[in-house]
Length: 225
Image (tube, rainbow, N blue to C red; front, side, top):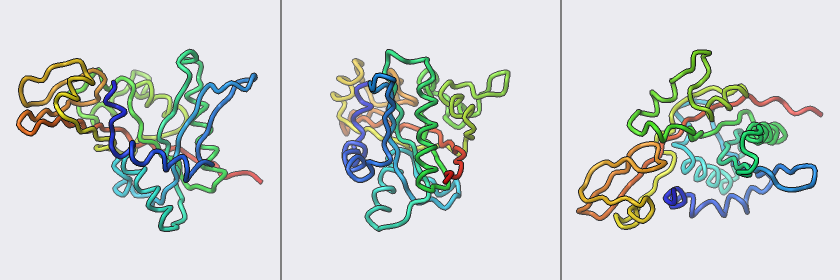
């Protein structure tokens, strides 16, 4: 999934995230001080209305940095990325990263923690609209998707679909290199790992992938003195 790293907004703004908000980034270490997981977040201003949430990862990155430049006092923390050492997958560290994000939100007096979640198994159902996929449930009532389920079990709820969370544009030959596929004609293509289809325009020599995510809202407890 080389194309995941080709989002232009993330490529341009991510370094500023680290420089501007170091106190909102986290790492988890084991008893021997080895890094086992980490997470990236960004504070921003949100009025609490679903309709005013950013469009996703790209949107909240841009808004958070813009709010900072304008010296607006942020009241909401957005998760951006949770990373776990691949050798330690399945040990619950992803849950600990989310809990740590909620703790950071609490310490900084944020009213909410939100997350534009990329569902783990959505790539297996690229033709299913995200709105429908996010509503799929298991017999016990929990979300069908494992990553949505982790957030759900930590008390989060789905508030909306982030329809344009990340956007990757590239030439047709770039997409062929990124995916190992050939695109002989214009149209929508299913590519490995993508949550929805990639639109290829041979005449313009462009391919475009607009990745949807799911906005989830986590409870944040007030920090204790």
